[in-house]
Structures are given as structure tokens and as C-alpha cells.
Image (cartoon, rainbow, N blue to C red; front, side):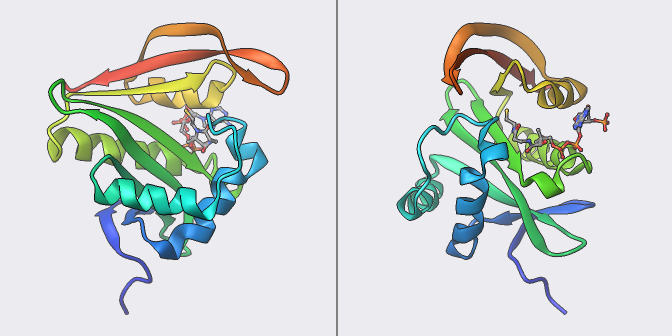
Length: 175
Ligand SMILES: CC(C)(COP(=O)(O)OP(=O)(O)OC[C@H]1O[C@@H](n2cnc3c(N)ncnc32)[C@H](O)[C@@H]1OP(=O)(O)O)[C@@H](O)C(=O)NCCC(=O)NCCS
């Protein structure tokens, strides 16, 4: 029997699926989820039209958003995206988020590994960058495990829950 989703990159515990309107409700749930957005930069409620814009930006190749699908259940677990492409410099930014019930099971590490390979070996990128809150220790640990290095930090940069937090800038160069 075929899969219930359109697989774009196949992995071990997860697949990365092409985004579609079928995932609009899931993306709304994920991006508005308080424990998830605690670690993300989105400050305002995410609306139907924001998801439409994500789909449009994918169509326009401004970003590549892939749904992380848990293969054991065929359920969407999160998303991972590349955006802010600088083709002249071979650079892009990377963002990932998983629903709380799918965290700490190795899915984030696998999804990031898959998109790194895709970015370097298929898109021809040479440097992946990301920003992560300094308080997001688990994410920083995961990125370090995957070879990302800290290039610097923006101190007391971003207001969240009454406090200005430091943002760490990390990158990974193609070997
Ligand atoms: C950050 C996130 C993507 C990590 O994905 P994950 O599937 O939960 O992490 P994994 O299970 O793949 O673990 C990968 C590595 O992260 C670290 N890690 C993850 N969870 C951890 C925890 N609870 N305690 C300690 N280390 C942890 C470990 O280094 C781990 O590697 P190891 O198991 O080989 O030691 C996920 O937790 C998430 O979506 N968090 C909320 C949103 C977010 O923070 N996004 C990143 C914004 S920059």
C-alpha cells in the first residue's frame, strides 16, 4: 500500500514530505504551540494566510519547507526549512521544530542530517547558518553534535516573556 503523504526525502525513522495545504492545520498547531514557539522567533499568532504564504514562498523558491513525518505512524511530527538563500555565497538559514510528543527521540537529529545532505549535495550550498536562543541548551547541543560551530552571539537581543535573551549564531561549512 502506498504512503499517505508525498515523500520528498526518505530517511530511517522519518521521511521529509513536500509541504501542501493538507498540512495547514498541523503547521498552525505547531507554530502556535506555546512550548514550541518558546524556542522560535515568531512573536505573533500564525494564521491561515501565513501558511498560505509559506506555500507561496516555497513555490517561488524563497524557502524550502519540508514536513517531518514519523514513519512509524505516518503522522506529521514537525517541520524543517531552508530560507534566506544567498545563491552567490552558497548560504542558507536552517530552522527546525517538532511537536513536544516527538521530541528527544532522535527525529530532529535525523531530519537535520537529511537536510544538510540535501543542501550541500543537491542544492549546491556550502554554508548553513542558524540562530538559536542561548537558553535552548538541547538544540545547541544537537547542532554541535552535527558539526555546527558557534560563530558569535547577539547579546540581550530578543525580548521574550519579559526578558531580553541572547541569540547564538551557528554555522556549518561543507567539508
Ligand atoms: C531542538 C529539536 C529540533 C531537537 O530535536 P529532537 O528530536 O528533540 O532531538 P534528538 O532526539 O534528535 O536529539 C539530538 C541531540 O540533541 C540533544 N538533545 C536533544 N534533547 C535533549 C535533552 N532532552 N537533553 C539533552 N540533550 C538533548 C542531544 O545532543 C541529542 O543527541 P544524542 O541523543 O546523540 O546525545 C526539538 O527538540 C524541537 O523541536 N524543539 C523545539 C523547537 C526548537 O527548539 N527548535 C530549534 C530552534 S533553533
